[in-house]
Length: 114
Image 1: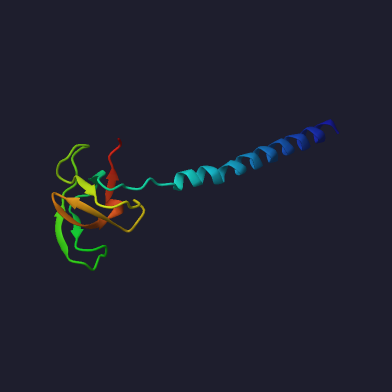
Image 2: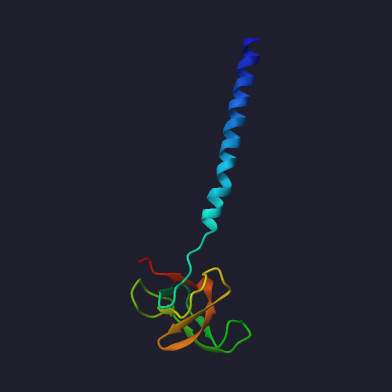
């Protein structure tokens, strides 16, 4: 009889702990999904070699040139500037690469930590 009460109590504590953890999961996932936008004038890194700079935000638009991957956190090969406020989760971002304004896949870019 005593053993049954202990098993019930253990099951109750386990259930309460599980429900407590579940209660916090939506908040954790919501904060993980939050993304900081790229601001106008913000410096960004190009994360992939030969990222195409296009004439508009579409894969069907002509490629102006291919940008090399950045080598570090300082202006260089694939370093670009955000032209407008835009989300890094967008399909395409408008950027300025060495004075040429065009579009590239936002997933190819990374904001430089300030």
